[in-house]
Amino acid sequence: MPAATLRHLFGRVVVGCLLALASLLAPVAGAQVERLFDTDYVRADSLAAPAGLTAAWTEPQKKLRLYDKDTRLELEADSRDCRLDGLRLFLGEPAVAHRRTIYVSRIDRDRFLLPILNPRGIPGVVPQLRTIVIDPGHGGKDDGATNAKLRLREKAMALDVALRLEKLLKKAGYQVVLTRRKDTFVPLPLRPVHAKKVKADLFISIHFNAIENKAVTGIETYILTPQHQRSTSSDKRQPDDRIKQAGNDRDAWNAVLGFRMHRSLVRSFQAFDRGLKRARFAVLRDLPCPGILIEGGYLSNDVEARKIGTPEWRQKLAQTIAAGVTEYRAALNEARR
Ligand SMILES: [Zn+2]
Image (cartoon, rainbow, N blue to C red; front, side, top):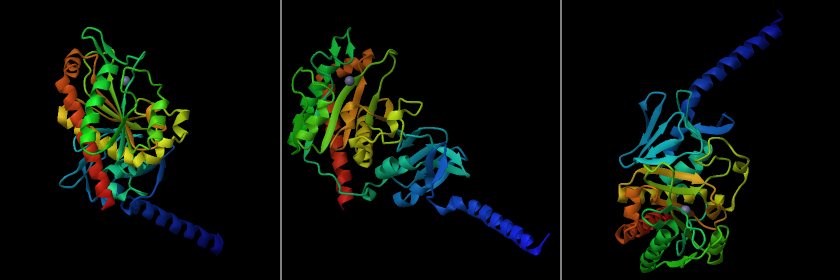
């Protein structure tokens, strides 16, 4: 074998060894992107430094905890469901065990987890919070969910909570606008148009749930699905996932708002935590400001519906949503500091 070829081969072996060494060292190198399952993934512990957390296995190769004295994020391989301070949050892509650690999708890190953990790191101008639009779900010919036995209709419950919330938010000094004040039908696409017209800084849509399985109870909070991700109810990717919606400009603040509101709701009611979820609901897609949709309980469950049917419970819901707004405002203030 000629010396040049030998040198060439030797060179390749050295380069090969160096590459192998580099790949061994790669797990400690930080935030590089890896393509897994046709998606950009990053090491979950790349969240640790910017959020001031420490990473440790709670179950090797399966469950990773990122924590400090106040915060505990639990990630699990092959699951879209994670826990932050005990609350259930849905990621857009499952966490993955890879290279002896856990990876999360880049979008989940940058547009969801990191903004929640560290609002101060969110790039761009911090949103204002002066005008709040409250959107009572359904109305007029659209009853929404119903409980015939208890004669409860979602449209009436949602409007009642909205009017109570309006009083509380006005008292706290906000400008408040409702998308409807009476039992009238408002088409879904007009609701975000309303928010645009009044230059809303925050949009809160109020709903109640129903499902065939009458045993189901609990609270869900929805934010807009980030571009290139699946909605929580979708097992497969959809062509729509690739489309950027106007509301996607505020993914990071939607995440902060969603988390803080969901925490306020689940803790106040000690309700079953059905999770902070993502959907491309018509009322969230075209918003000019951060927004959420709250499913405040199940009218299809008689025990939960009976509670929703009382003015005291609806007042508590309005107060809890107002407290969630205060928590969101605290995050905006943290980010401005
Ligand atoms: Zn509804």
